[in-house]
Each structure stands twice: as structure tokens, then as C-alpha cells.
Image (cartoon, rainbow, N blue to C red; front, side, top):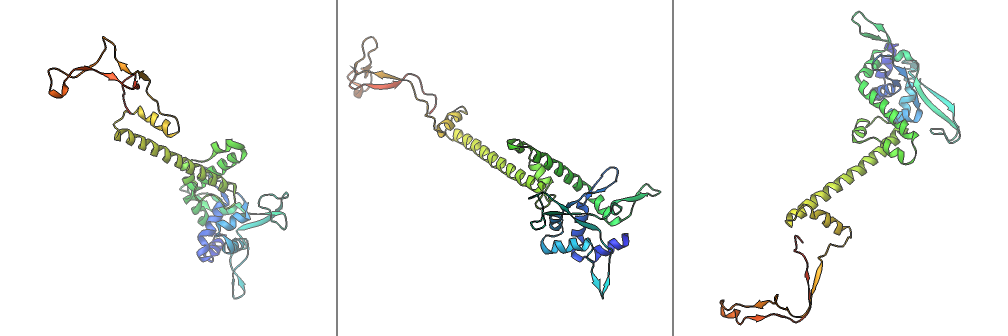
Length: 292
């Protein structure tokens, strides 16, 4: 079996890596016990992983049993995957518009991902080393893929605004990149998560910009930081605070507070000393000005 499976992969040419990735995605990896199991996926998702379009469909068909021909002779194993159809409720997700059925892809048998046991050195003896080694090299990615699946399922269960609190952050968006199949719940979850973190990034940039502008404004006008609150209140439409004013009436200031202008001991332009008369009323601030 191992030789025949390798022979099929080698015959795929440039499609070999895509085929291995598709087979890997059909495995639910057990990182501890190494008892990997199969997990199916929708036919459309399998085609997308295999390269998309006609190229992906051809690769899926080859793995499902369509054999290459050489001088009229068939080459390679019968198949490594199966493609099945199941009846689906009306308008069900992934259902074919004509048949009303969903198509699923699965590994042909768990032997492809199992080990015969351990050798004398305690190392596993897989039935198909090629796929086994690929799984071992990508176990971390499989763990992230499983975490993505669980988080997407939890997000889907929630309703309304509660969904926003189940979205992934920046670290999750980066860690899960490239793990979601086209048209899957995981892909929708990542799209919403990306939108959420993008909005958060814009808000953060705006806040940092506002803080920076405020600090610059206070420093440029030699004002205390307490003035920043008033500055932003004014920007948002709140009237600036104004001094309490006292009306100064016209006439002479009565004794003993009368103000005499000039000086007899000063220069000539300070003579004569005379009382000041206020011709028109005006307003004066009742307190000192601390900043403007």
C-alpha cells in the first residue's frame, strides 16, 4: 500500500504537495497518543485546498480513483479518498443546487494514518510513512486548526452582540492564517475577527493621535496638562469657561479708594497729579487669569 500511495503522489507532479495537504486536512491529529482518526470535509472545500477550480477538481478526482493512463494501462492505487453524497435539507449549506445533496470527502481508510506499532527503539512503524511524516511535521498546525474549529463553533452558537466577544484577537488572526477552508464557518469567523481587530487598530491609532496632539498643544502653548480637558471639551462643542465679570460704573472712585494718576516726584509727563474719572462703564474679571 505504501509503495502504491507514493507512486500515485509522485505521478501528480506539481500537485503532490497540494495532495499531501488535502490528505493532512482530512486527518484529526492526536498529538499525544498518535491515534490519528479521519475527519471528512465538504467537496468544495477539498477542491479549494487542492488548488481551486478545474485544477483542484482534477486532483480530487485523481485521489478518489481516476487513474492516469500509460499506453492503455492503469497506474497507481484505486483511491486514497472517497467522495460521497448525502441528502441535505432544503437550502442546506453546501448542498448542490440541482440534486439537493451535499458531497463529502474522506480518507479511504484509517490504515493510511495508523502505525503497526513500535519498533525495538520505541519508534512508530506507520503503514504509510509519507503521510505519517507529513503529519508529524505539521502537528502544531493541526493543533491550531483544531483550536480554530472549536472557536468558530463557539462563535457560531452565540447570538447578537455576544458574537463580538467570541472573535479572535490579532494573535489569533495571525496564528489561524491559511487554516480555514473556503466557504467554511472557520473562514467566516476569521473574516469577522479580521474586521474586528482592524476596527480596534483604527480606534487605537486615533486615540494615540489625539493624545499626541494634546500633549503637543499643551507644550506649544506652555500650558499645564489640566488644560487638555478644557481643550477637548471646546473641540467637542462645549463653550469655553469664561471669567466672572464685575461691572465698573462711570465716574470718580470715592474716597478713600480714589485713584490719583501721576507723580509729583517723577518726570514732567507725569504731572499734574489728578484723580481718574471713568467716562464709560466697563467689566473687569473678578479673579486673576491662570491660563488662556
